[in-house]
Length: 162
Image (cartoon, rainbow, N blue to C red; front, side):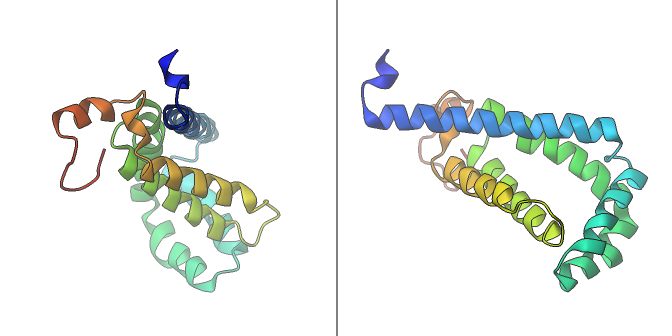
């Protein structure tokens, strides 16, 4: 198997597997959240209200209460689509991996702040953040992903979106 002949190719393949795994995690969490009703305006608002009530960041809690929860219809449906398509499918399929990876990493930082007042272990979000940044910056969608097709047409795009 030629993928295993060099350290570089092994690293690329392992990052591609991590990318696929992270996308699969997002899809699994998305399915569970869908089942629980968190992507409806009322379900999303109730779920996020818990973060507003427990986070240690006053600024974050105020943003949730004053802006996001009153517009829960927009954020619930937006999160439904973004988590499924951009974080889940794009990572699994390796589509626009630098963009989807960095957006997903930012989402993990959001969850780190949101859960700062709970008993959740913060390491989960930190580890996922670091993995997603590595996946994005390594352009791991160019290995076992659709980004490879885009890179064949234009290997050096103006903006590194694949």
